Length: 461
Image (tube, rainbow, N blue to C red):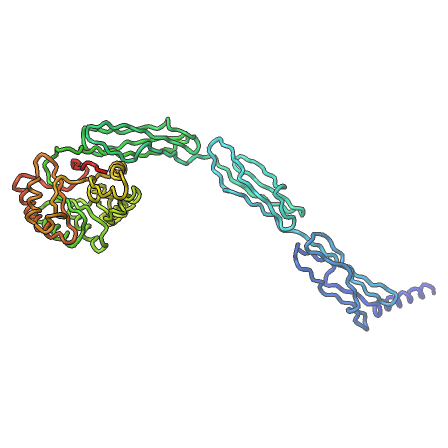
């Protein structure tokens, strides 16, 4: 009988619990959040069969998602003399790997046998901050491995690859100038060169020099400098040595017709006469307008020498400094190269090398320039026959004719100064007669090239 009573009491208690004691329900009893992730309470409810007590539930505890750890949140409901409680566990974790940043290159090429000098590195973690001092370096044969672990056991590694190899060729630096000009009969003095290598250092003693200069023959010679480093990388550079005729009263008896300050529309008439007479000439050109570029191209295509005079022809600019002179020369040089497709190396100074007007702008500049242009691979020409067509004979074709033919000689290289710029119609009108006189008197005509005997004036500044 007592047993039956006990059973009935148990059933009554269970009915009481089921129908009357509220139950607290959570959507989850354990939550895992990433560091800095926003925390939300989620759904909470409390009710019995007859009534909803959700609003009476108290939430006790806080979650700080900025700090890794395990947090307990208690949900409490006071029901009569009973205290009902439900607990949620919130795990705040850090699953983000640290970041290692390598300074410098990640692929390193070292000279054989050289030791790598650390370029630097850093390590940061979103949670732990600076972890640079916790980085572990492991030096292997072909790489360096950098590893770091944060307080949450997140580990990361990066590599810097190391290769021992020398593929960089040595560097040769010529002593003196890359282009050297000497007069026939003068001794060529070899100035040598130096060589350095990224791995082997100074290897000047390993330079091999080949090539010869025959100072008894006019021509262009090349001296080659070659050096090889321990890894077999080879470099060669060349020096050009021009042997030219010395300036003198002697020559080859040729007539070299030269025209300064063009091109202009008058140049077209001069080209027509030259073509009809079968004569080649030399045109010392200036900048002028691009509208005359086709005239330079025509002259070149018809076999004439295109030489450089000046781009601006402004004495106050070109003779104010060596830098200004070469800036101007480079402009006309680049223009000519763009038109004819090759560099010109024959030049004439504005006013000639003997001009004195340059003293007004820079004392001694012609002395410096006549040396520098030769060292840069140019040859400059003055004249020994002056048509005076830019002076007193400007409008008189007969005087121009006589000025030329009366100063020709079979015992010199006859470099004739004339002009083809705008207004020199008298020069055009005298040209055919000059040519025909030369032919009748056994002269030959040619354009200036590297084999032409030098005709230069004495320098007066």
